Image (cartoon, rainbow, N blue to C red; front, side, top):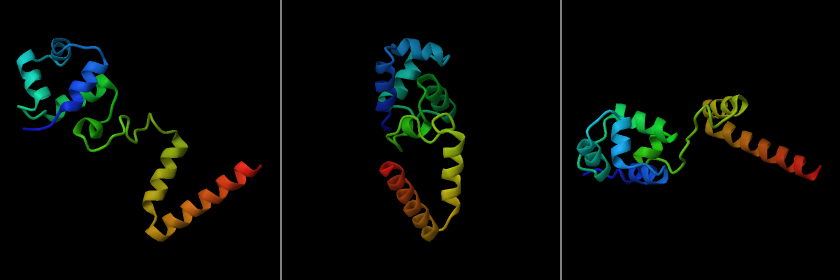
Length: 112
């Protein structure tokens, strides 16, 4: 049995019934209920549709992250996205240097 409690919580937060979500996903209510209670595994294509419906990341639905939005393009500016990609391309030592430089810049900015 899988734990898909987040899709139930997301549905309830959106004030939707299981029937409404099942209709939105073009499936039988019984099948959607099986997903929500963990009796059946949610297929990827359904998880994607649920993520779009609730405007959350797949990582959130899967329980991998507690960040509902994840590091999606819509959550970050273009500059932030470039910064994250650059950081990831650095080795650990240079990542540490970059973080030190960012801390120094922040300190300078807040003193001004």
